[in-house]
Image (cartoon, rainbow, N blue to C red; front, side, top):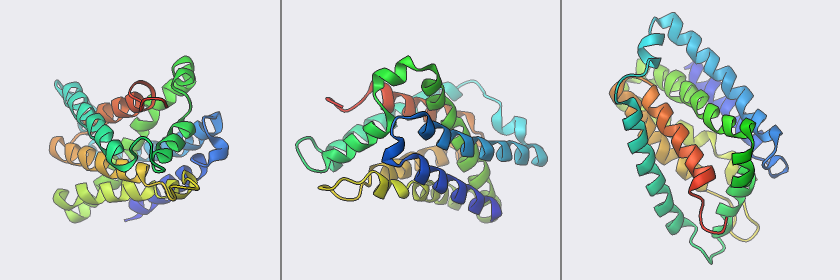
Length: 222
């Protein structure tokens, strides 16, 4: 299970560092995520190459973009519904959402910065290589696909646990939003990867979900 431990240790440390309020919206935050995930992505590519499955797992096929777009839209809808339940406007818990948006940075600045827009699109690719490619791949080899998909989602959510404290609010308390989002998204992307046995549909979905969540479909007033 060495790849499971490697991915979890690296991802958790990267998130704990990058998602500190002192790094909110800065290049340090993006680099703090991009560099460790790029390293994990490179390890995943090497592992797939050694296994002789690199092209099989990463070559896009007809329909991948459609699957990614549909799943991303469903996840965006689900995230809006979850926000309304967990952090409704006018409540102390709504501050949780504010902390997430402050950490990511303003939508206007994200759109104007080619570097940050690129980070929004590239980091999800590295994440999918790390979690669905490397971590879920090892779990599948050891436990089978049926158990690997939900377990990979649990590990994906667990890696975001530092944000419960780094994005906490003095009044609302510990912030569960990113952990819950990671669990829901991880289940969708994990099962998608398990069904099609390739990574591009989950990659397309992940890229679209992150971009539109951060830039286009923000909660009103944030």
